[in-house]
Image (cartoon, rainbow, N blue to C red; front, side):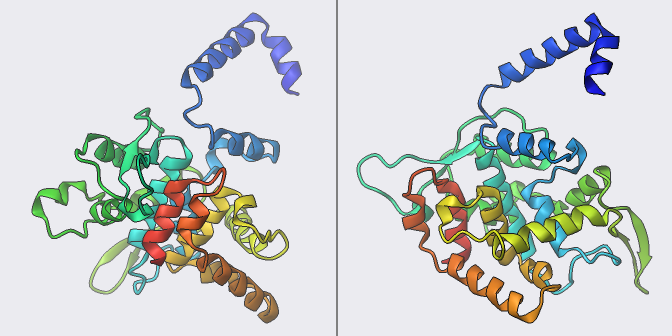
Length: 290
């Protein structure tokens, strides 16, 4: 069908294609870790609108399907979403840890460096990236999680806080056709909620998490897809991982949690030193599991 459309469009289609190719070439290799995933998802039939960031995936796991909001008792998801942003920016080639010159520093003592300031197309990511790029001297991963969450006693650094993150992520998911927007009355106040409308995408996400520690389990973190590995760690840190395991049978649940515990018991310093490892990813893991 695509080839027939291109033939009928003639020169116009070929001109547009050449322009798009030129634009892609200019972008270079900034999204080197992100693009292969996009191509892989295209092959599976996913549209651009249903491609989710790590932040959106973690929020979606935490949202109650019908009610459209996260648990009022969950006080972990705020910092967890900030950790997702740092890893997302690292996987897109925007951030990295400072290099070790003379002797190797610990992950949590190394500063976060802006590798590329090219816009990502996501407003939250670009806002966080600008803060990191403009801050001198650089801060550590732990500091950035606290600063972006607004958990600082320094009034001069309160402007780093990213506000209304959950609401902004939910609106992104509404635009992608995953959620909808409603108003609910809670006696004393009205609250905007975002119930699930596209159950297929949510189930696909849940299945991906379940399979990563069951049918597709690989007993080697180096062979894990970096995004899936990050999703498991950050979903656990955000206290939403259990939601993905709730439908499992008892035996499957026990096995899944046993393997998650194996991942949590890994030593980030050791794993980050391995070939092809993303150091910033493991620095975020260290910040939440130390």
